[in-house]
Length: 430
Image 1 (spheres, one colour):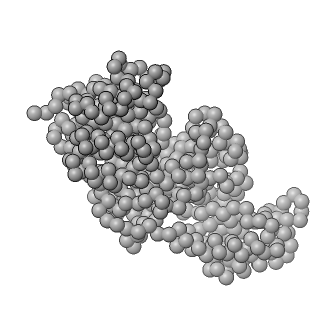
Image 2: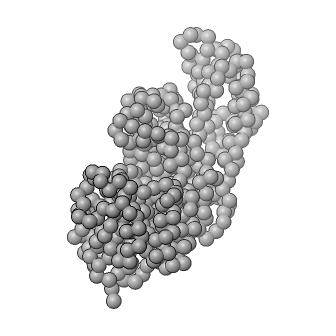
Image 3: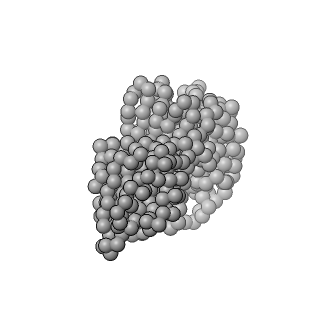
């Protein structure tokens, strides 16, 4: 007999938890019609029960004792929204052992331990949904697990961190430097007081680990992902990129080739014609290429209480529907294979390289000669005089080249007497 009442316990009532509760309450009637049963929030466990909350709550919902969620036999679904690895992993383990279905938005935990947890859920014939862990309100996880499941996925490329995208947008559109744009992002609540996870690329690395694992059916460990942030990007780099016909974005890139996986996060120059180049402010987008569908792009708000809360609430709805119709545990971990992640040194792409040099004859030829010795072919060169008149700034764009060769060439070039500094180098993704 189908269940008539399905009860939810929530762990955490921060930004995502509040957005989830608000979404479930505001759309309660529609959600219950879609499920065909009544959906009730039974308990919400929080660290500070007396704290004022931004959403209206029913009497008796809040508790400071997580055991009131974990040990309640009436609770069917546990939504873990506290973040981090521990104690979240232990709570999810315990909930699965108690026969409770799981919904989470915990990207770090999914990236580091998702395979084990998903496997455990499958063993217990329980649902484990995590749409909110990547790209906020964009329904990318279910799209890749279900909508694109019949495709061989060749490539996943995304702007999956709203903080860094906002900073780069401000630098590009308003001419601000990195520090100024970061301070504005913090003032508006887009960046944390400690923005390291965002600006150093770690947040995006967790997300591409999840997406690549789904896309390429093989576990991708975040420790194997090259993660590089945007702190070295200057207003000058953005101006040069614009002159050359490019925008600079922090990209999370996953590719499948010859049975191995590319997985990397770094700033990149994108041609203005690329659909990701026009994704600005705090918006996210994920570009997917499949064998049958071709190229598709998913776009929307990548963070925030309501966008992410929408994703979590949708997962709760889907799990509740599965419970009602006895179809839980259908979607298990899809990491069937064990593919290696290609080392960054063996990646081939184009490069933008900016350096300060002496304004003398034969300097360009000397530097170009070093590039040639390492097999790096130059596509274009832009030279501009520096106001002192004794030095010049040169921007090189290479043809496709091996990362290892570019690094080694730049080490030699930086030691040349005519080179004051190699100021920056950024990969170019066509």
